[in-house]
Structures are given as C-alpha cells and as structure tokens.
Amino acid sequence: MASAAYDVTGIGNAIVDVIAHADDAFLAANAIEKGAMTLIDSARAEELYGRMGPGVEVSGGSAGNTMAGIALLGGKGAYIGKVAKDQLGDVFGHDIRASGVAFASAPLLGGAPTARCLILVTPDAQRSMNTYLGACVELGPEDVDEALIASSQVTYLEGYLWDPPGAKEAFRKAAAIAHAAGRKVSLSLSDSFCVHRHHAEFVDLVETHVDILFANEHEIAALYGTDRFEDALEAVKRLGKTAALTRSEKGSVIVSAGSVVEVPAEPVGRVVDTTGAGDLYAAGFLFGFTRDLPPAVCGRIGAIAAGEIISHVGARPEADLRALIAAKGLL
Image (cartoon, rainbow, N blue to C red; front, side, top):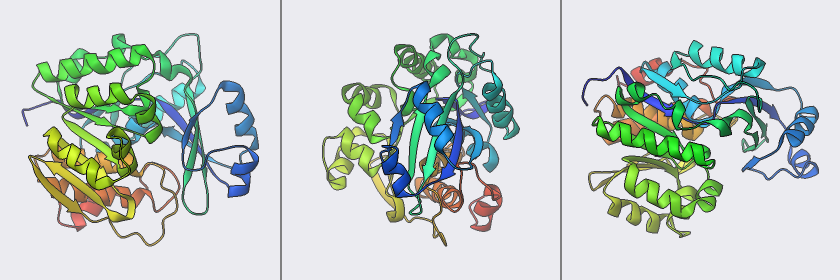
C-alpha cells in the first residue's frame, strides 16, 4: 500500500477493563447475561463493582485492544477515543501509550467519568461484559483528526461505538477522509446485539463505507438474517470486499477478491478467557494486510494472536507476539 505514517488508526470506546473470575451462580444471582455485552448505568456499575471478586484493571475497549496488538506485533498504530479528565482517564492514556500506540484525543472536561467494562470470566472461559460507557458517548466528528486518518493505511472502526449520533458522524467523516486519501476502512461488527440494534444502518455502513469487514459467525449471520453460516458466507462473497469471519475453534474464513480461504485455529493447551480474541485476531490480520501479505497469512497471524490471548486472563498479550509469529516463519 502507499506510504503512510501509521499502519492502522482505530476509533472506538476508550474503556478501562475490570476482569474477575466468577461462577454461573454469581451470574444468575446478579442477573448477568452469560457471554453477552450488556450496557449498564452508573448505579449498576457501582453495584456490580462492589460485588465482584479481586480483578485485573487495564485499559481496554475493543479497538484499543486491537491497536495495542498491532503495536506489540511491531506495527505503527494510533487511537481515537474519548476519556474524561479523571483518574481512570489518566490510567487509560498512560496504558495505551505505554503499549506503543499514539493517543492524543482531547479528554472530556466535566460530564460523565471515563468508561469501564466489568468482565466476569466463568470456568468455561466465557466472558460476560457489563459496560458503563460514560465519557465514550461524547466522541464526535470534532475528535476525528483528519491528518491522522489520511496518513493511516487503514482506519479501523469499532461496531460497539455505533450508537450515539455524534459517533456515527465521526465514523462517516473518518471513512470519507480515508477514502479521499486512497486509504482503506475496516469495521468490526463487535457483537450480535449491535447488529440487531442497528441492522439497517450496519448493512448500509458495510456496503457503502467499509473495505475490510471483521465478524464472528453469529454476527455475520445476524447481519444477513440467517442462522446458517453458509448462507451468510455466500452473501459476503457477493459483496466483493475483504472479510475475515471467525468461528472460534473452527478457525476463520477469509473472503478476498472472490476467493475463499479457510484458516485453522491456533492450537491452545487450555482456553482460560476468550476476552479480546476477536480484537487480537483483527490486530494480526491487519498487521499482515498492511504489509501486503496474502489473505491466508494474514489470517494465520490473526489466529496466532488470538490463540495467545485466550490462554490467559485479560485482553492484552502476555507473550511476545512478534516472536510467536517469527517462530512460525511468518515474518
């Protein structure tokens, strides 16, 4: 691709993750929907936080995790997201910059506090997320740095953020800037609930503004109104765009230039926590994509990154991702 200052710039919900273990009984007692992402208000956030066991706190958010993954793979990434001028906002900014990602978004002064996601991980490695968006919802088109987007090979949009009117304007503005500069736009569908909630808008976004689509099999099925992955895959093929569709232990299916490639999942000794698996898969794929690697290789790097992240608690890598892919002969 044409020379650029950054490989990928991500736009998403700037959230501090609080991750703790819990059993199914805890989920039931606290009316938490297992395996889903549920939006909560500040009162519910305080209540759940008080009931959770010991946890790990780290800057997160789906696109934030992806950008950290790209940086740890050796890529150049930047991030646009809204935090408040408070303690958690400072934690988020320091943490994401420490991972090697450029982050210069202006903080929100006054108003809602920095967002946080309370994540309960059950023994079967399923994660149930309870998210208080806080300052995230204040992100708008004024936060989109035109020079940054124009100088990034790919702009990566987080589907979770597609809710407030200002965020929708920010996405459309970023996409227009990227395409005017001859760059690519990527979207993660994020969660089936996002697809159902904004179905018509997501279909338009994918068909009109997106070049590279990320989705798991449930999300892509929801987008095309089917319960059969095969039918959704046929619909994706007709789009004529690049798509990476993840299927957990079944690996991933990549559609590119009319061809379909199946990539196996990376073997993992024990699945501990699936938080961030899709985020890190996207990081690996985009790292390869911005280096003009073949789709199968992009998917393989994504699978390796996802395999590392599900082997421990948390959505940030603990192993050297670059060393892992180098050991497989992919660098």
